[in-house]
Image (tube, rainbow, N blue to C red; front, side, top):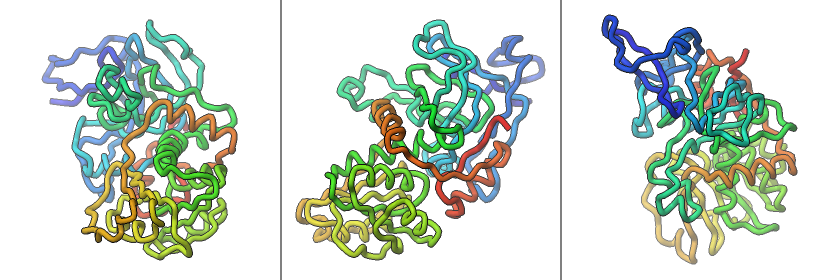
Length: 369
């Protein structure tokens, strides 16, 4: 028995078993004649065990009528990828190709695609597809869709030389950003932007940022553009230094109390033990936004920390409108992404570096080198 890889009509990837000459999911002769390289997760495991396997002979996915085929140039490395790889999120698809900050060139479009053409440079983010008919989709909350697909989690992602995606969920990327610079905008940037919107801050307000990785270093730049004072709380000196370089008025340790009460705070680190410190730093009526898809256990909270109408809320995914708004804003600021490039084949090394806070800014896999 051996494993074989194919794609369904929507461009979503499926694994099939080959028993002798019997293929449970048939492949076309065209698919068999072409191949791509990808980093594949077969079983969740600690990233220290380097669980992503390199495959150099996977068939290139075929886009469905509403899909596009993208030659991937770069794919950002996100903490959500780490949660998928290590099994901290419930398994939805296995094997799976992780990666949801995809930058590349459209090579092929489906017969029903309009507005996206071969040769266009596009990005693919976390939200891959929504049903369009549930109560959330109908009320502008597609990020909460009950039947959503997510890139690199429920469908294959961008740790590969090719990826397929629904055309309605790709973004045309601004020309002012290189592939390396653009990749972190597609999750770190978009989710950071949504977290800032949910913080409901006005110009002149004060914001605490807890954890200072990819999303935080972009969100800080947006906050400063909006006239918001930023106070960075992070455990690593190199990250505190970067925060100050980007315009933070103060940088201290993760649980260190900032020099003033804050109007809002965002926790980007997946560490529930930070919540009490962030709540204690809030002024009356302040909002604490939890910016991650996964968080470790949150300790019991003293009601005094919540009293005076303080609010705790989470961020769940993003809408396409969030993506379009943020990419337009990123050009006007302009956002400067600090990146560290890794070859595609070094995806395990990149995720190990991410887990150990060894990346200053955002890690990006270069998939076309």
